[in-house]
Amino acid sequence: MILWGPPGTGKTSLAYAVAASSDRRFIEMSAITAGVKDVREAMTAAQSTRDLYGSSTLLFLDEIHRFTKAQQDALLPGVENGWVTLIAATTENPSFSVISPLLSRSLLLRLELLSDEEVTRVVETAVTAPHGLASNFSVDDVAMTALVHFSSGDARRALTALDAAAAVARSRSGDASGPVTILADDISHAVDRALLRYDRDGDEHYDVISAFIKSIRGSDPDAALHYLARMIEAGEDPRFIARRLIISAAEDIGLASPQALPLAVAAAEAVALIGMPEGRIPLAEATVFLATSPKSNAAYVGINEAIWDVREGKSGVVPSHLRDASYSGAQPLGHGAGYVYPHSAPLGIVAQQYLPDSLAGRSYYRPTAHGQERDVAERLERLRIILRGE
Image (cartoon, one colour):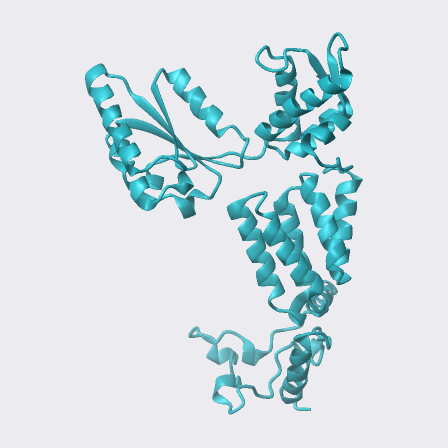
């Protein structure tokens, strides 16, 4: 089995649970420190244990995406022959980091970031558990909200911050008897950053993303980076940010800078591939590029106007010369008759009507004089002169 998910979502815990519940011999290896020799020794030991004692082995391999092809190849004999039951964990897409023979022999389980409610349950359990804070502390509601937002769905991050905040709270309270209440300021001091007022399901979520997009549209990269930082620090889903960048590239920049949309898509793919916190870098790169690019919403306005005409019933009939003429009964109907193949013309374009008669001469796309769309505007003017025989 391959467990794929962000940090702090329980990949290692699941491996321990499977090992304990199935009474298997448990071996844990990290791809950061283990080499091919270590893998082969583990395979040999697992085979011997099976043959001598009838005991199966569960091998947990963390960070498998860091293994080279040779290291992963060394796992195959043990997996194929049943010497080990392999559970591997990765924070990266296994399709790009795990060899096909190993991937095809594995079940893939994708773990998602924990919800706020799930992180809250983890923290509440840690506060009362004997091996946690053992009820020597309590967490007030504001601090709990701050802690959950800081964790960004990462239980390990939440527990680390809780432990540090408990130390801050104990120091603040001095020799006070009884349980110590952990406050929002304790969380802030523990994680060394200001707590942000940001509700991912409320007004702040929509206000900040709105300000972010409008700052990009207004060509202010500094403001755009500020709002991007606020969202990142508040634990906003980076995939949501990436999707909005793609929309902004298409809607607000368009053909004034044709590179904007591919760059925004590449940033989204990069975030999906590498995750956070490194994902902040391609997000910032795309944000700055979009904010400093020339702007045009001509394509956005054009498609909206075309859709409006269609909804108003201004569709018209497809001209006969443009209709499908590939089937045997098309010729008697006059389909394709009179169509001029543009590639046969010296200029690669001929005077020919493409819109239905009811919309002939209609112009939906009106390019601006901004950026590369200026060149498009000049070319389109010449194209329309030829097309419309003007």
